[in-house]
Length: 65
Image (cartoon, rainbow, N blue to C red; front, side):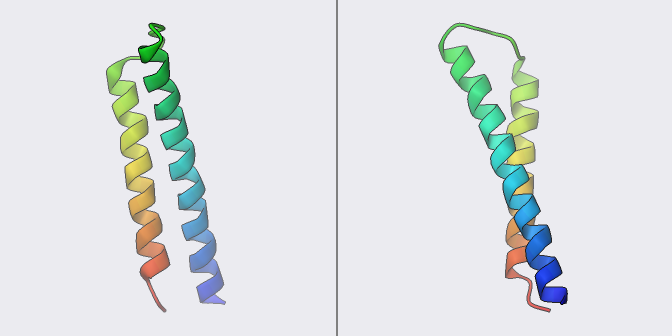
């Protein structure tokens, strides 16, 4: 049962990290097109949240109870 819970938490971090990377990619592509709606610190925040979330996903997926 604990293994399923750990896998579920890791999956949530996986999807949240991919969502953060998607938002950061949208910001980057809007800058490339000349549309500046978001600032660079917000881009770093979303990208950092994506990296942090994927790191936590790795921790939960590699942890064996």
